[in-house]
Amino acid sequence: MTAINRLVLIGGLACLAGCATAPHRARQYSAEYDALPEETRERVANGFIREGDTSETVYIAMGPPQSRQKIRDDFGLYYEHWIYLGRPAPGQDEIEPGNYRFVTVNDMSWSNPFDSDEKNQRIHVVFLDNVVQRVEVEDEDGTPLVRPKMSMPGR
Image (cartoon, rainbow, N blue to C red; front, side, top):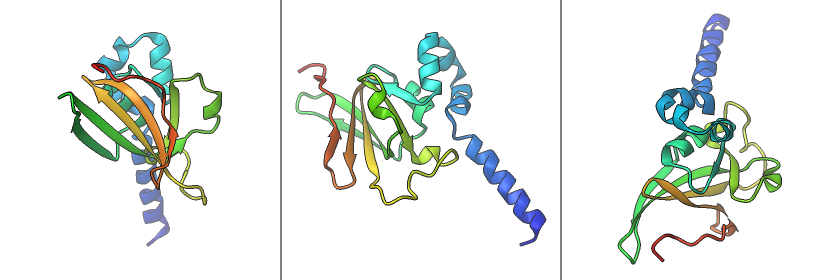
């Protein structure tokens, strides 16, 4: 591969990586993003999610999930369950309770969280009627790390 071809390839990859940012996703969902209160727009543009956010808000903040599932519980309620691979962002313990920022595989253009010996984690975002009800984090082996105390609606 010639030097020019490598430069073109690197430039193309850099452009694609830039599309995986919260500001880019905010432009994709501009109507939903513009309708959010100013403090929520700032939070989401910085990649934070919390209980009460919509699926569009989570998508803008974190990008597409690595997996989606629809689950019906014993009471007949249907939940949408999004799963991301990643880990809480540095300084996560300093963030107000219920406000989460994760480094996911969607953030690879900014930093590679998977080039160390640390275990990856699964971030579970659970929606009911398009609204986040729970955010849970577990190690790859399924050990719970974050289980917010929050009751599910209808229980």
